[in-house]
Length: 378
Ligand SMILES: C[S@@+](CC[C@H](N)C(=O)[O-])C[C@H]1O[C@@H](n2cnc3c(N)ncnc32)[C@H](O)[C@@H]1O
Image 1 (cartoon, rainbow, N blue to C red):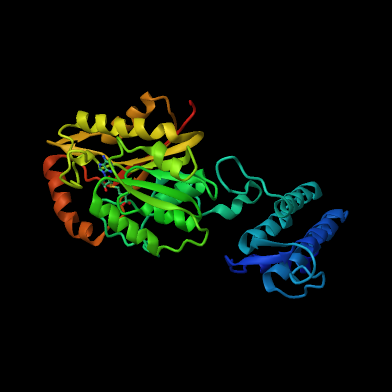
Image 2: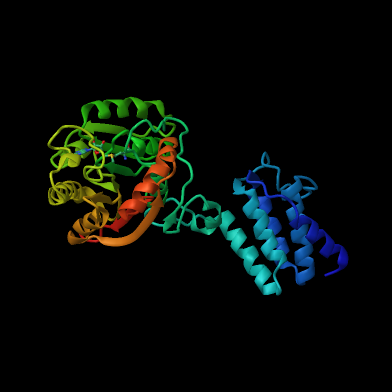
Protein backbone atom coordinates (compact mmCIF):
# COMPACT_ATOMS: atom_id res chain seq x y z
CA UNK A 1 0.00 0.00 0.00
CA UNK A 2 1.49 3.37 -0.94
CA UNK A 3 1.57 6.47 1.24
CA UNK A 4 -1.11 8.29 -0.70
CA UNK A 5 -3.37 5.35 -0.08
CA UNK A 6 -2.59 5.35 3.63
CA UNK A 7 -3.24 9.07 3.86
CA UNK A 8 -6.60 8.73 2.17
CA UNK A 9 -7.55 5.92 4.47
CA UNK A 10 -6.68 8.01 7.51
CA UNK A 11 -8.76 10.92 6.24
CA UNK A 12 -11.77 8.73 5.73
CA UNK A 13 -11.57 7.40 9.24
CA UNK A 14 -12.00 10.88 10.63
CA UNK A 15 -15.29 11.34 8.77
CA UNK A 16 -18.20 11.82 11.16
CA UNK A 17 -20.75 9.01 10.98
CA UNK A 18 -24.17 9.82 9.68
CA UNK A 19 -27.17 7.65 10.40
CA UNK A 20 -28.99 8.47 7.19
CA UNK A 21 -30.19 5.67 5.05
CA UNK A 22 -28.77 5.53 1.58
CA UNK A 23 -30.64 4.12 -1.40
CA UNK A 24 -28.54 2.45 -4.06
CA UNK A 25 -29.04 0.89 -7.43
CA UNK A 26 -28.82 -2.73 -6.31
CA UNK A 27 -27.67 -4.19 -9.61
CA UNK A 28 -24.88 -1.65 -10.10
CA UNK A 29 -23.75 -1.92 -6.51
CA UNK A 30 -23.55 -5.70 -6.66
CA UNK A 31 -21.72 -5.46 -9.99
CA UNK A 32 -19.10 -3.15 -8.44
CA UNK A 33 -18.72 -5.47 -5.43
CA UNK A 34 -18.17 -8.38 -7.83
CA UNK A 35 -15.57 -6.41 -9.79
CA UNK A 36 -13.69 -5.56 -6.60
CA UNK A 37 -13.86 -9.18 -5.51
CA UNK A 38 -12.27 -10.26 -8.81
CA UNK A 39 -9.19 -8.06 -8.36
CA UNK A 40 -6.16 -10.16 -7.60
CA UNK A 41 -4.11 -8.01 -5.29
CA UNK A 42 -5.04 -6.79 -1.83
CA UNK A 43 -3.82 -3.27 -2.63
CA UNK A 44 -5.95 -2.87 -5.75
CA UNK A 45 -8.92 -4.37 -3.91
CA UNK A 46 -8.48 -1.82 -1.11
CA UNK A 47 -8.03 1.07 -3.56
CA UNK A 48 -11.27 0.22 -5.30
CA UNK A 49 -12.99 -0.10 -1.94
CA UNK A 50 -11.77 3.38 -1.03
CA UNK A 51 -13.28 4.72 -4.25
CA UNK A 52 -16.55 3.02 -3.49
CA UNK A 53 -16.50 4.35 0.04
CA UNK A 54 -15.90 7.83 -1.33
CA UNK A 55 -18.99 7.60 -3.49
CA UNK A 56 -21.09 6.57 -0.48
CA UNK A 57 -19.55 9.19 1.80
CA UNK A 58 -19.54 12.17 -0.53
CA UNK A 59 -22.23 11.14 -3.00
CA UNK A 60 -20.04 12.06 -5.97
CA UNK A 61 -17.66 10.55 -8.58
CA UNK A 62 -20.34 7.96 -9.17
CA UNK A 63 -19.21 6.80 -12.62
CA UNK A 64 -20.72 3.36 -12.09
CA UNK A 65 -24.24 4.68 -11.48
CA UNK A 66 -24.50 3.18 -8.00
CA UNK A 67 -26.51 6.15 -6.85
CA UNK A 68 -28.65 6.21 -9.98
CA UNK A 69 -31.80 4.76 -8.50
CA UNK A 70 -33.93 5.91 -11.43
CA UNK A 71 -32.16 3.48 -13.75
CA UNK A 72 -33.70 0.08 -14.36
CA UNK A 73 -33.53 -2.56 -11.67
CA UNK A 74 -34.14 -2.85 -7.94
CA UNK A 75 -32.94 -0.50 -5.28
CA UNK A 76 -31.54 -1.36 -1.89
CA UNK A 77 -31.76 0.82 1.17
CA UNK A 78 -28.84 0.54 3.59
CA UNK A 79 -27.79 2.31 6.74
CA UNK A 80 -24.98 4.52 5.62
CA UNK A 81 -22.88 4.44 8.80
CA UNK A 82 -23.02 0.65 8.84
CA UNK A 83 -22.09 0.46 5.15
CA UNK A 84 -19.11 2.72 5.75
CA UNK A 85 -18.02 0.52 8.65
CA UNK A 86 -18.25 -2.53 6.36
CA UNK A 87 -15.86 -0.79 3.94
CA UNK A 88 -13.56 0.02 6.82
CA UNK A 89 -13.49 -3.62 7.82
CA UNK A 90 -12.46 -4.52 4.27
CA UNK A 91 -9.76 -1.85 4.34
CA UNK A 92 -8.40 -3.19 7.60
CA UNK A 93 -8.10 -6.75 6.28
CA UNK A 94 -4.61 -8.23 6.40
CA UNK A 95 -5.21 -10.82 3.68
CA UNK A 96 -7.08 -10.85 0.39
CA UNK A 97 -9.11 -13.85 1.57
CA UNK A 98 -10.38 -11.91 4.59
CA UNK A 99 -11.18 -8.86 2.43
CA UNK A 100 -13.07 -11.09 -0.02
CA UNK A 101 -14.99 -12.67 2.83
CA UNK A 102 -16.17 -9.22 4.00
CA UNK A 103 -17.10 -8.32 0.42
CA UNK A 104 -19.05 -11.55 0.11
CA UNK A 105 -20.86 -10.87 3.37
CA UNK A 106 -21.72 -7.36 2.26
CA UNK A 107 -23.05 -8.60 -1.06
CA UNK A 108 -25.12 -11.30 0.63
CA UNK A 109 -26.72 -8.69 2.90
CA UNK A 110 -27.66 -6.69 -0.19
CA UNK A 111 -29.17 -9.47 -2.27
CA UNK A 112 -30.70 -11.71 0.38
CA UNK A 113 -32.99 -11.49 3.39
CA UNK A 114 -32.70 -14.00 6.20
CA UNK A 115 -35.21 -13.82 9.03
CA UNK A 116 -36.07 -16.24 11.81
CA UNK A 117 -39.51 -17.63 12.66
CA UNK A 118 -40.46 -15.12 15.33
CA UNK A 119 -39.43 -11.69 14.08
CA UNK A 120 -38.54 -9.64 11.03
CA UNK A 121 -34.90 -9.02 11.91
CA UNK A 122 -32.81 -9.52 8.78
CA UNK A 123 -29.92 -11.48 10.22
CA UNK A 124 -27.72 -10.72 7.21
CA UNK A 125 -27.89 -7.04 8.19
CA UNK A 126 -27.97 -7.53 11.95
CA UNK A 127 -25.66 -4.58 12.54
CA UNK A 128 -28.43 -2.21 11.49
CA UNK A 129 -30.57 -3.25 14.48
CA UNK A 130 -28.60 -1.52 17.21
CA UNK A 131 -31.95 -0.21 18.52
CA UNK A 132 -32.69 -3.71 19.81
CA UNK A 133 -31.34 -4.34 23.30
CA UNK A 134 -29.76 -7.73 23.90
CA UNK A 135 -28.26 -7.02 27.34
CA UNK A 136 -30.04 -8.12 30.50
CA UNK A 137 -29.57 -4.78 32.26
CA UNK A 138 -31.68 -1.94 30.94
CA UNK A 139 -30.90 1.53 32.13
CA UNK A 140 -33.34 3.74 30.27
CA UNK A 141 -33.09 7.39 31.13
CA UNK A 142 -36.23 8.71 29.57
CA UNK A 143 -39.73 7.57 28.77
CA UNK A 144 -40.77 7.75 25.13
CA UNK A 145 -43.51 10.39 25.18
CA UNK A 146 -43.90 10.74 21.42
CA UNK A 147 -47.21 10.31 19.58
CA UNK A 148 -50.06 8.99 21.72
CA UNK A 149 -47.74 8.00 24.57
CA UNK A 150 -48.67 10.55 27.19
CA UNK A 151 -47.65 8.73 30.34
CA UNK A 152 -50.73 10.00 32.24
CA UNK A 153 -51.48 6.69 33.93
CA UNK A 154 -49.94 6.11 37.33
CA UNK A 155 -48.53 2.61 37.16
CA UNK A 156 -48.00 2.33 33.41
CA UNK A 157 -44.81 0.98 31.90
CA UNK A 158 -42.55 2.86 29.56
CA UNK A 159 -43.29 2.31 25.87
CA UNK A 160 -39.76 1.03 25.30
CA UNK A 161 -40.73 -2.22 27.04
CA UNK A 162 -43.46 -3.33 24.60
CA UNK A 163 -41.47 -1.75 21.76
CA UNK A 164 -38.51 -4.01 22.43
CA UNK A 165 -40.67 -7.09 22.97
CA UNK A 166 -42.68 -6.56 19.80
CA UNK A 167 -39.61 -6.00 17.62
CA UNK A 168 -37.82 -9.00 19.02
CA UNK A 169 -40.65 -11.50 19.31
CA UNK A 170 -43.18 -10.75 16.59
CA UNK A 171 -43.44 -10.27 12.87
CA UNK A 172 -45.49 -7.63 11.12
CA UNK A 173 -49.15 -8.60 11.15
CA UNK A 174 -48.76 -10.88 14.20
CA UNK A 175 -51.14 -10.65 17.19
CA UNK A 176 -50.20 -9.40 20.65
CA UNK A 177 -52.29 -9.94 23.78
CA UNK A 178 -51.86 -7.76 26.89
CA UNK A 179 -54.01 -8.94 29.80
CA UNK A 180 -53.43 -5.82 31.95
CA UNK A 181 -53.49 -3.20 29.25
CA UNK A 182 -54.08 -0.16 31.52
CA UNK A 183 -53.57 3.00 29.49
CA UNK A 184 -52.91 1.04 26.30
CA UNK A 185 -49.12 1.43 25.99
CA UNK A 186 -48.74 -1.99 24.35
CA UNK A 187 -51.48 -1.33 21.80
CA UNK A 188 -50.07 2.08 20.86
CA UNK A 189 -46.78 0.32 20.11
CA UNK A 190 -48.69 -2.32 18.13
CA UNK A 191 -50.08 0.39 15.87
CA UNK A 192 -46.67 1.94 15.42
CA UNK A 193 -45.03 -1.31 14.52
CA UNK A 194 -47.79 -2.83 12.40
CA UNK A 195 -48.90 -5.58 14.78
CA UNK A 196 -52.47 -6.38 15.81
CA UNK A 197 -53.22 -6.11 19.50
CA UNK A 198 -55.84 -7.08 22.03
CA UNK A 199 -55.81 -5.59 25.51
CA UNK A 200 -57.91 -6.57 28.52
CA UNK A 201 -58.55 -4.03 31.27
CA UNK A 202 -60.78 -4.40 34.33
CA UNK A 203 -61.37 -0.75 35.11
CA UNK A 204 -64.05 0.62 32.71
CA UNK A 205 -62.91 4.26 32.89
CA UNK A 206 -59.30 3.31 32.25
CA UNK A 207 -60.34 1.01 29.39
CA UNK A 208 -62.36 3.82 27.82
CA UNK A 209 -59.52 6.32 28.13
CA UNK A 210 -57.09 3.80 26.68
CA UNK A 211 -59.38 3.25 23.68
CA UNK A 212 -59.48 6.99 22.97
CA UNK A 213 -55.74 7.35 23.33
CA UNK A 214 -54.91 4.37 21.12
CA UNK A 215 -57.07 5.81 18.34
CA UNK A 216 -54.91 8.92 18.35
CA UNK A 217 -51.90 6.91 17.22
CA UNK A 218 -51.48 6.63 13.45
CA UNK A 219 -52.34 3.27 11.95
CA UNK A 220 -50.46 3.21 8.66
CA UNK A 221 -50.52 -0.59 8.43
CA UNK A 222 -54.25 -0.82 9.13
CA UNK A 223 -53.87 -3.17 12.09
CA UNK A 224 -56.59 -4.04 14.59
CA UNK A 225 -56.25 -2.81 18.16
CA UNK A 226 -59.05 -3.69 20.54
CA UNK A 227 -59.50 -2.97 24.24
CA UNK A 228 -61.90 -5.25 26.10
CA UNK A 229 -63.23 -4.19 29.48
CA UNK A 230 -63.21 -7.42 31.48
CA UNK A 231 -61.55 -9.48 34.18
CA UNK A 232 -58.55 -11.24 32.62
CA UNK A 233 -59.13 -14.31 34.77
CA UNK A 234 -62.45 -15.07 33.17
CA UNK A 235 -62.60 -13.18 29.87
CA UNK A 236 -63.59 -15.42 26.95
CA UNK A 237 -60.47 -15.10 24.84
CA UNK A 238 -61.54 -17.84 22.47
CA UNK A 239 -64.58 -15.80 21.48
CA UNK A 240 -62.62 -12.53 21.25
CA UNK A 241 -59.90 -14.02 19.05
CA UNK A 242 -62.56 -15.89 17.07
CA UNK A 243 -64.21 -12.58 16.14
CA UNK A 244 -61.00 -11.71 14.34
CA UNK A 245 -60.73 -15.09 12.71
CA UNK A 246 -57.76 -16.21 14.80
CA UNK A 247 -57.29 -18.78 17.55
CA UNK A 248 -53.84 -17.83 18.85
CA UNK A 249 -51.60 -14.86 19.52
CA UNK A 250 -47.86 -14.62 18.90
CA UNK A 251 -46.85 -12.54 21.93
CA UNK A 252 -48.32 -12.36 25.41
CA UNK A 253 -47.56 -9.36 27.61
CA UNK A 254 -48.51 -9.11 31.28
CA UNK A 255 -47.90 -6.12 33.49
CA UNK A 256 -50.02 -6.90 36.55
CA UNK A 257 -50.36 -4.65 39.59
CA UNK A 258 -47.39 -5.10 41.90
CA UNK A 259 -49.93 -6.43 44.39
CA UNK A 260 -51.20 -3.50 46.49
CA UNK A 261 -48.45 -0.94 45.81
CA UNK A 262 -50.93 1.00 43.68
CA UNK A 263 -54.65 0.36 44.19
CA UNK A 264 -56.10 0.52 40.70
CA UNK A 265 -59.78 0.31 41.70
CA UNK A 266 -62.12 -0.81 44.43
CA UNK A 267 -63.14 -3.98 42.59
CA UNK A 268 -62.59 -7.33 44.28
CA UNK A 269 -61.61 -8.69 40.90
CA UNK A 270 -58.67 -6.29 40.76
CA UNK A 271 -55.36 -8.01 41.58
CA UNK A 272 -54.31 -4.92 43.51
CA UNK A 273 -57.08 -5.65 46.02
CA UNK A 274 -55.91 -9.18 46.85
CA UNK A 275 -55.82 -9.46 50.66
CA UNK A 276 -52.60 -11.42 50.89
CA UNK A 277 -49.60 -12.26 48.73
CA UNK A 278 -51.00 -15.80 48.38
CA UNK A 279 -54.31 -14.50 47.13
CA UNK A 280 -52.51 -12.19 44.70
CA UNK A 281 -50.48 -15.10 43.34
CA UNK A 282 -53.60 -17.22 43.02
CA UNK A 283 -55.34 -14.49 41.01
CA UNK A 284 -52.24 -13.99 38.86
CA UNK A 285 -52.10 -17.75 38.24
CA UNK A 286 -55.72 -17.66 37.09
CA UNK A 287 -54.90 -14.99 34.52
CA UNK A 288 -51.95 -17.07 33.31
CA UNK A 289 -54.20 -20.15 33.03
CA UNK A 290 -56.84 -18.22 31.15
CA UNK A 291 -54.49 -16.54 28.67
CA UNK A 292 -51.58 -18.86 27.95
CA UNK A 293 -53.57 -21.54 26.08
CA UNK A 294 -53.97 -18.92 23.36
CA UNK A 295 -50.26 -18.28 22.93
CA UNK A 296 -48.80 -20.06 19.92
CA UNK A 297 -46.23 -22.72 20.72
CA UNK A 298 -42.64 -21.53 20.24
CA UNK A 299 -43.66 -17.95 21.04
CA UNK A 300 -42.93 -15.63 23.96
CA UNK A 301 -44.59 -14.39 27.09
CA UNK A 302 -43.19 -11.21 28.70
CA UNK A 303 -44.02 -10.61 32.35
CA UNK A 304 -43.19 -7.17 33.75
CA UNK A 305 -43.27 -6.87 37.53
CA UNK A 306 -41.45 -5.46 40.55
CA UNK A 307 -41.05 -6.37 44.20
CA UNK A 308 -42.45 -4.72 47.32
CA UNK A 309 -41.81 -4.19 51.00
CA UNK A 310 -44.38 -5.25 53.55
CA UNK A 311 -43.90 -4.59 57.27
CA UNK A 312 -40.20 -3.98 56.74
CA UNK A 313 -39.72 -7.21 54.76
CA UNK A 314 -38.71 -7.38 51.08
CA UNK A 315 -41.35 -9.47 49.31
CA UNK A 316 -39.91 -10.92 46.09
CA UNK A 317 -43.25 -10.73 44.35
CA UNK A 318 -41.64 -10.86 40.94
CA UNK A 319 -39.88 -14.15 41.63
CA UNK A 320 -43.03 -15.62 43.13
CA UNK A 321 -44.86 -14.72 39.92
CA UNK A 322 -42.01 -16.13 37.84
CA UNK A 323 -42.40 -19.40 39.75
CA UNK A 324 -46.15 -19.48 39.06
CA UNK A 325 -45.37 -19.39 35.34
CA UNK A 326 -42.53 -21.90 35.57
CA UNK A 327 -44.80 -24.34 37.42
CA UNK A 328 -46.99 -24.36 34.35
CA UNK A 329 -44.18 -25.67 32.16
CA UNK A 330 -42.82 -22.54 30.53
CA UNK A 331 -39.17 -22.16 29.61
CA UNK A 332 -37.39 -19.22 31.20
CA UNK A 333 -35.48 -17.40 28.44
CA UNK A 334 -34.39 -14.25 30.25
CA UNK A 335 -34.58 -12.07 33.31
CA UNK A 336 -34.08 -8.42 32.50
CA UNK A 337 -33.43 -5.92 35.26
CA UNK A 338 -34.75 -2.51 34.31
CA UNK A 339 -34.20 0.73 36.20
CA UNK A 340 -37.00 3.00 37.31
CA UNK A 341 -36.36 6.17 35.41
CA UNK A 342 -36.53 9.33 37.50
CA UNK A 343 -39.63 11.44 37.29
CA UNK A 344 -39.82 14.92 38.79
CA UNK A 345 -42.08 13.68 41.59
CA UNK A 346 -39.62 10.92 42.48
CA UNK A 347 -36.69 13.35 42.36
CA UNK A 348 -38.39 15.55 44.94
CA UNK A 349 -38.91 12.60 47.25
CA UNK A 350 -35.42 11.21 46.81
CA UNK A 351 -33.93 12.68 49.97
CA UNK A 352 -36.84 11.61 52.10
CA UNK A 353 -36.58 8.02 50.84
CA UNK A 354 -32.85 7.96 51.38
CA UNK A 355 -33.34 9.09 54.94
CA UNK A 356 -36.03 6.47 55.53
CA UNK A 357 -33.81 3.79 54.00
CA UNK A 358 -30.93 4.73 56.30
CA UNK A 359 -33.16 4.69 59.33
CA UNK A 360 -35.00 1.47 58.48
CA UNK A 361 -32.08 -0.52 57.05
CA UNK A 362 -33.79 -1.08 53.72
CA UNK A 363 -33.17 -0.23 50.08
CA UNK A 364 -35.00 2.16 47.82
CA UNK A 365 -36.53 0.34 44.85
CA UNK A 366 -34.76 1.35 41.67
CA UNK A 367 -35.55 -1.60 39.45
CA UNK A 368 -38.19 -3.96 38.19
CA UNK A 369 -38.02 -7.15 36.12
CA UNK A 370 -39.01 -8.38 32.72
CA UNK A 371 -39.23 -12.15 32.68
CA UNK A 372 -39.25 -13.82 29.30
CA UNK A 373 -40.80 -17.21 28.91
CA UNK A 374 -41.11 -19.38 25.86
CA UNK A 375 -44.05 -21.66 25.32
CA UNK A 376 -42.60 -25.05 24.58
CA UNK A 377 -45.53 -27.34 25.32
CA UNK A 378 -48.95 -27.36 23.72
C1 LIG B 1 -49.55 -2.12 36.20
S1 LIG B 1 -51.03 -1.66 35.40
C2 LIG B 1 -50.70 -1.92 33.70
C3 LIG B 1 -50.28 -0.66 33.02
C4 LIG B 1 -50.04 -0.78 31.53
N1 LIG B 1 -48.90 -1.61 31.21
C5 LIG B 1 -49.81 0.61 30.94
O1 LIG B 1 -48.74 0.87 30.38
O2 LIG B 1 -50.70 1.45 31.09
C6 LIG B 1 -52.10 -2.98 35.83
C7 LIG B 1 -53.50 -2.86 35.29
O3 LIG B 1 -54.18 -4.08 35.52
C8 LIG B 1 -55.56 -3.79 35.73
N2 LIG B 1 -56.16 -4.96 36.39
C9 LIG B 1 -56.13 -5.34 37.68
N3 LIG B 1 -56.79 -6.50 37.86
C10 LIG B 1 -57.22 -6.90 36.66
C11 LIG B 1 -57.95 -8.03 36.19
N4 LIG B 1 -58.40 -8.98 37.03
N5 LIG B 1 -58.21 -8.11 34.87
C12 LIG B 1 -57.79 -7.16 34.01
N6 LIG B 1 -57.12 -6.06 34.40
C13 LIG B 1 -56.83 -5.93 35.71
C14 LIG B 1 -55.53 -2.51 36.54
O4 LIG B 1 -56.74 -1.82 36.43
C15 LIG B 1 -54.35 -1.77 35.90
O5 LIG B 1 -54.80 -0.90 34.90
